[in-house]
Length: 305
Ligand SMILES: CC(=O)N[C@H](C=O)[C@@H](O)[C@H](O)[C@H](O)CO
Ligand SMILES: CC(=O)C(=O)O
Image 1 (spheres, rainbow, N blue to C red):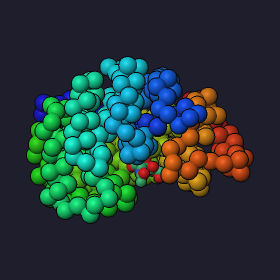
Image 2: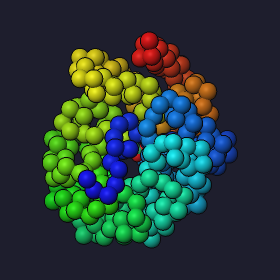
Image 3: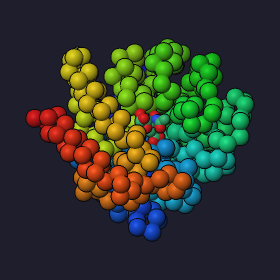
Image 4: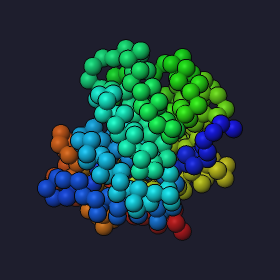
């Protein structure tokens, strides 16, 4: 056993969405309502300020405000992972120190984006964040968005640091997931990224997952996770198929998060539109949103029957 409690990171961790008012400013009240919704649904943890949280589209001050509102509402009751990755190492470190000061359970970061960075550069970027706090650190590997491909060797090197407790892997390769699991060793968490492959990821060794579509259907991911824990493979597969029907429909909207927010609105949670350049849904999409909502409510009722 290392010095960190890894169990609190195992299971379904919802990637939290950006919450805005109708002017497009951060809406702390909506942040708190959304956090409470997930807590009441029985979700274990939240990943704040990542891709779904639109952290890359927000200022450091806004990101701090969001994390503070989350901590005030559910801190202590849920596992809170703060995504602190920003283009500059300096800002990422500032956000990591802030996350520790408000009581987050862990920090996590993508590599810096835009520049085609060398592995040495990315390693130094991550290590600056890792060394700036005593919190556990979760590497975020999402090469299709960042352009940086984490090697198994680099993962192994980073995992040797006692505060590096895991990796969230969003590449769509369960082989790579398994290789990371093996390279990280026994005290190292691998968290599944592609929501469409939750069952596949878990079956090759993922300890749980962090996902951008869990937030519209936490009930279904919790059900799927329960089936996996119960070794009910056939039933787990059926839930994964239902989840994938919803995801496939969501991916047809002008942006994934625009679709997610439109669905949540029909569940009574008003968190605004995604921030540009992420596109909102339009009038023309509303029939499809309504139909998807009906389908989803049916699945949720089944999951809870
Ligand atoms: C590329 C990407 O954004 N991956 C997310 C995080 O890993 C997933 O949660 C996806 O949003 C989800 O699987 C839908 O494709
Ligand atoms: C999808 C995810 O994990 C994120 O929003 O960062």
